[in-house]
Length: 555
Image 1 (cartoon, helix red, strand yellow):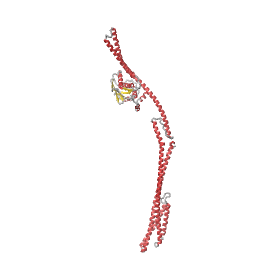
Image 2: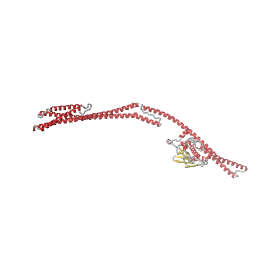
Image 3: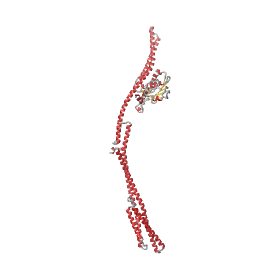
Image 4: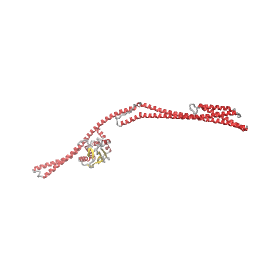
């Protein structure tokens, strides 16, 4: 089967078919041109001979008419008698007949020469042998007239009649020859029409054969070359698109089939490498998640230590108040015991005792509230997410940060709606807000201010932290969220706070952008979080913005 042959064999087959088509068409064209050329040569030769035949008829009739005039002169001379005019007319008529005899002989010789010297390979309109036979008969009649012409006696009827018979025979032979030409031309016309019909049918057969061969060649090319190429191309595109399990089957045994087998082998290796890469990626992703959680926990513990340093000072105040109240109670109690009076008889002591006890209780609860807030912030919660009021988170963070000694002189203003909910992990977002607020407070001077805006924007919750501090250059903006990048003015900081913040926001499918008009012109950090839970369909259309930072953090 040709489909199983090599491409070289298929090309030889195609060239053979094309050669056959060319031969059919070339033979048809050459044969037609040859037949046309033969017809043209025959017509051209016959066109030269027809004037000779017409000239023979005309000259023979002229001889007969000339001799008829001589006969009339003879009759007139017998009636009127001989005269000078009659002799002159006889002389003129004789000269005309002599001229016609010479002319017809010259024409006959030229005609015979033309017929005898014609091309033998050219199909003549009139059969050459018939023409020569007719011309020979005309020559015999002409010879007989020439022999009798010198012996003609106008005074005897016998000689006159014999010459008239000869001239009539010559005219008859000439006219018969002309009729022969006309009849043969009519036969040739019928013959040419028949040949023309055969020629048309032959060309039609050649054309139909060529068309059939072309269709066969086109179908063979499409099924044995074009279709395998198309199948190979489509399969290559599928493999390039990642469908490494696709197999290309061309159904041939040529070079294209070898190429398809090589493509299948390569796609198999690609699939093995791809599967192995997916396994490695899954392992690396798991390691990244573990390391990221460890870094987040470490940063959170560092934040707790940072808050603990400030909260220790805050706890000292209520503890001092508790100690002072207890000392006062002890002194008053000693005085009462030494006086020997009962507590009920001393209303001032009772009132002071109640006041101090209330103060001790209030300050103790105050310490408990501070430590509860610190413990709540430091608690490592799970990764579950729920609808959380961001306004409460912001107020909680600001209430803690504003009590720290280093930030007491700085102004923090909150601009928020009544409730702004987002589907987040409250502990992680609390750390994000803490990082944003503390970074803003670090960048402002002693009398600087930080504004925190919380509101809802469509399907997203918005938190904006604006400050009028030192601002950021374009270089700082380009590297702001990179791990270990820090520009704190006091030289402290690990450079992981905003990097981890960016990572947490990305895990929540939110966005965090920073902007600044330049050094000394303040900064803006804008956080957006989804209001509702993000589904898998939404995730398929989004890009995880945190992977680059994860890779850098792992590195």
